[in-house]
Length: 114
Figure 1 (cartoon, rainbow, N blue to C red):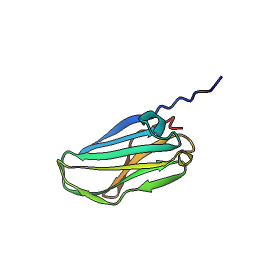
Figure 2: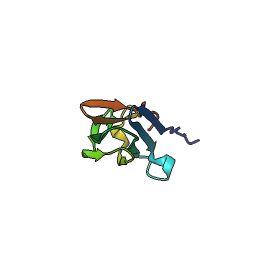
Figure 3: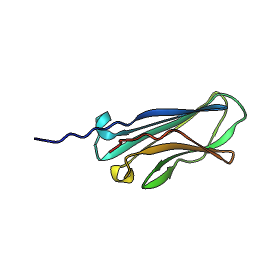
């Protein structure tokens, strides 16, 4: 008999005073890709306030990955996607982060990625 693995992954978000930070992460098997990779997507939708320089990041047990700094104004959305080997998510989880104006914001962790 063969064995089966359960992959959860999913999406989450964090409400901020001037926008929403969205994060999703999936084992490739969930989305028709290789099960040896984790795929993430992150976006920040700014709903108000002054323009900010924002840095989107994804943190795995095996390392912190960063996009480039982007300026975002009210009514705009910035986004970033990333794929990494499952081995980078050695604890099978990931969290989306954003740094702006000296503060770092985070989404809830997404688990069961491997």
